[in-house]
Length: 386
Image 1 (cartoon, rainbow, N blue to C red):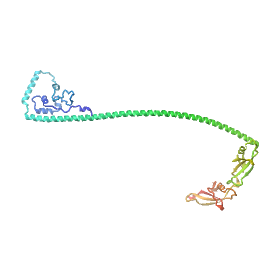
Image 2: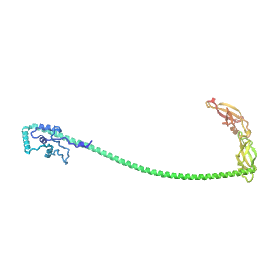
Image 3: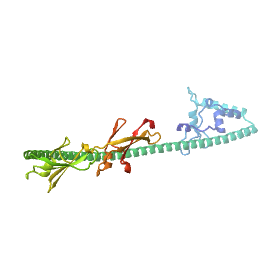
Image 4: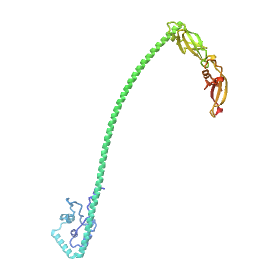
């Protein structure tokens, strides 16, 4: 709501003197009252402005504190004629009109009192309306002033909030830039250290490769020298003997003495690099070497194709399913003749068996059933057990 709506004047008010002046002498009270009730467009002069405060300069058309217009305001409110008349003619006409009105239009005392009472009631109502208008104007001005103050406070709060946000953003940006600088410095330091470690690693790797190459060359030279010495000495294995008992199915341990050794040869190195042939199979080196004073340097082997140690299964028993719907059936077989002193359980666990065309390298168990000997047990797939 704009402030201009409260700058207009309060409702107008005229007293008896102003009415007489407006309508002239001789006018009746009824005419005066009807002229007051006439629309603004039909009034001969402007309404007085009573909205001015004490101590302020009044509008030229506004009444004085006693309710009367000044002569200056009257002269301004009356329309000026286009032609000038002599002053004495004007005064004469005004005098005649005044006398005529005085003798012909005087109201009676009762009518005068009645009009005065009505006028007093109208004046009091007008004062009430003016007071109400002032109160309404003050209330609305206070409301608008409060809204303006609230808008100003909100605008101030927005400005303060904006400044705080800008300061906070600036602070965060500075901190972020500091962190970025720190991260970049750390990243550069890490890259530098990584490059140093890579250079050191490459240097160590190169040195290690050189050492390995040198060691391999030296080792190869040593082997070549030993081979030449063995060739000159013509080393061979003598006194080859097999153990009395088998180690497992088809396996037996052998020992032999290295012959033709000379004091210039390393006996243990010569043992490790001297081959032997057992049961048609050549072994490049023994599994172990030992140097005994009485029997010299001896080597040890385990031969895998020893026929005398080949075990066998005498017969096979097909038993029931291991469990209902298990899909497996139990198979049992008795191990053949075992020589005295041999480890029957190891031989049993290393003896294979063909079942339904498929070879099983060893049984899952080898129980010793006393007088019945060792038995092998297998669980094989069987569709009839599903």
